[in-house]
Image (cartoon, rainbow, N blue to C red):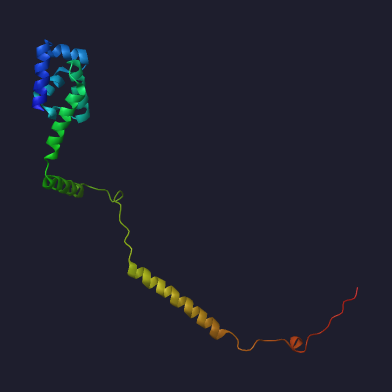
Length: 163
C-alpha cells in the first residue's frame, strides 16, 4: 500500500496540487488523504470506503481509477492471503472460548432436547404388547355359542297388522 500511496503523492505533487486543495475538491478529509499517501490502511475502518476514496482521489489526479483500484485489490489480496490456517483456527478457538465465558441468563439459553432412541423403542414395544393383550382378551372373552332367543329358533312369529 505504501507504493500505491507514494505513487499518488508523487503524481499530486507533480501536478502542483496541495493536500488541502485536493481534500476540499473531492470532499475527502485531509487526514484520510495523508493516510492514503502514507499507506496507512489501519486508519480506516472500512476497506470498501477506503477503496472508493482511492478511486476518487486517482480520478481527481487524472489517473485511471480502475487501474489504481486493481493495484489496491492486489495489495489487499497479498495482505489477506498470507494469514495462515493455524492463525485462523486459533482465532476461531479464542472466539469459541470467549463465547463460553459469557454470562448467560437461564431464560435465554436454548437447551437441546435429548431424544433417547432406546426409550422410544421401549415405549413402542410396550404399546404393541398392550394392543396384543387387549385383542387376546377380547378373543378369550368372546362367547363360544351365540345366544339365540327362543323366538328366533322356532322360525319366528308372524305378526299381522290391522289398520
